[in-house]
Image 1 (tube, rainbow, N blue to C red):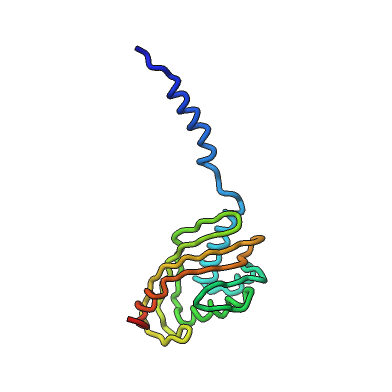
Image 2 (image 1 turned 120 degrees about the horizontal axis):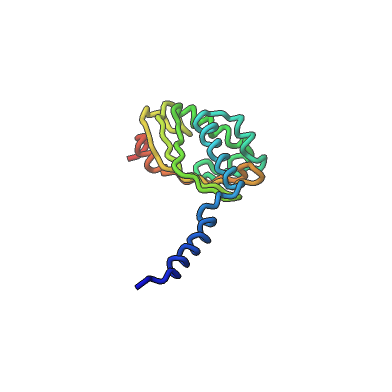
Length: 165
């Protein structure tokens, strides 16, 4: 007895209709936002190129980071923070593990590594290495980072550096 071909044909029709939705490319703004965040970590944090902040951050950039409350608005508010980290941790490195982006935001999960060779925000140098996880959220407006939120595993970092038990 011959099987009806209606069900396989219907399944093929449904799969064919779903393929465009499954293979859709992210919107151009999401792709651009991902590239902005990659530049931010690679050029600013990994390479210490402070001038890139003037390109990537809006003039009204707001840093909502809890460890440095109320830094000045704009790229000028972040430059001393980046400088302090590079002074205290000359081998500072951010490895981007994941980036999720849409047309107005990007979230990056990174692993931060380094060795504290000099004082770091008032903490004496230890010569010890650290590896910590970090989540960063960037609000992007007109191609520039306008706001930033960060959560770092600071407890693990302080333990690894020997500042707390």
